[in-house]
Amino acid sequence: MNLGRDVFGNRPKFGVLIDPDFERDPRFDQLLDYLDQSSVDIILVGGSTSLDDNIDRVLSKIKNACSLSVLLFPGNALQLSPKADGLLLPSLISGRNSEYLIGKHVESALSIVQSGIPVFPMGYILVDGGKVSTTAYITQTLPIPAEHSELVVQTAVAGQLLGMKCIYLEAGSGARHPVSKELIKEVKKHIHIPLIIGGGIREKAEMLRIIDAGADMVIVGTAFEEQPEKIMEFSRAFHQKVQI
Ligand code: 1GP
Image (tube, rainbow, N blue to C red; front, side):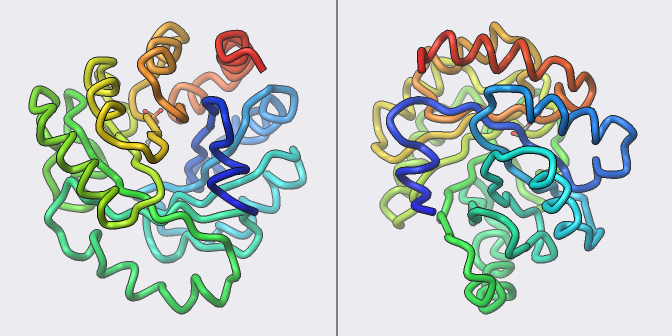
């Protein structure tokens, strides 16, 4: 898979994040059923708290249920599976914890190469979303204050200069406020690599605002874990907007 072309292509994409822990939830199968019927573009799998080694099984279940491409978005070195179509390899460039900038990568580098999965290096930027996020807690890093757009822009540009192939601007899973459209526009003005937006998107209208602001990919997780049926209306609205 050529991640640049096949994943981002020439129009914005709509992605769903599945936490491997969600496999234990009774709504997991329902979520997969809706994904199969929907016009979602891509599935991301990963989570910052999951320590189960169920990733192969989760990937198998997803692949059996639908034909969508699945990218790993790993929260730790256990979340690696050759069954995935690609790996978004995050470096937490908003933080100053060397473990999440390079340490985990050194630990898993040879396993990643052996797995043969296409890798897409990603600058991961955590922006304050109105509450302490699990990512901030687990990584022991501070998010960038949302009002300091210049710091967010500088961080995104630094990621691009370091060779990252995309930037994930993240308000944190379950954030009170998603990343603002002003901030998305500002970052878009300064980078030419794809921009992924996620965290705290619960309403269709928010998702549509985020596309309007210029996001290349929008990711929703928690809202669909809580109400899997929402996948249908979100993906329909998304594709009406981007007109495939
Ligand atoms: C988290 O951006 C993703 O990494 C998704 O966030 O769970 O809040 O949708 P939500």
